[in-house]
Length: 109
Image (cartoon, rainbow, N blue to C red; front, side, top):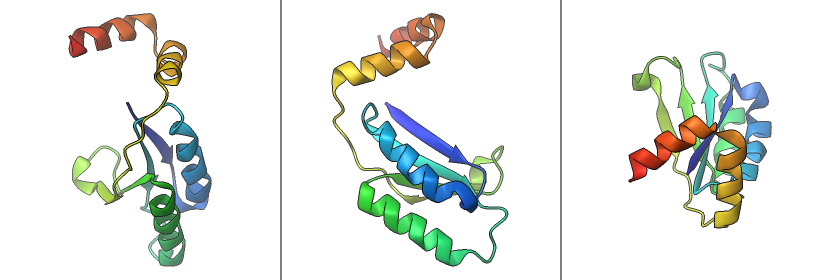
């Protein structure tokens, strides 16, 4: 399972790093995705996010237009985790509707 923590700007991105890290309890890969339209001069903040994501194994994605995949950039890839299968199953049961769980089963069959 891959999870994404989305943040609207760099102002909340550092918080998002640690929220994405919490996902690693039940995710195989965790990413932080940040809308970077508003931070033209915030290179220092971006470098800190890159450093923390790399240190913690969190993937970091930036984007300028959420509706256009051409603007997405994977800055750092996420490290592969081996979460406890029970935690993955619990997450799926509590976060995904039973109808969507059935769809997932069909896709994986």
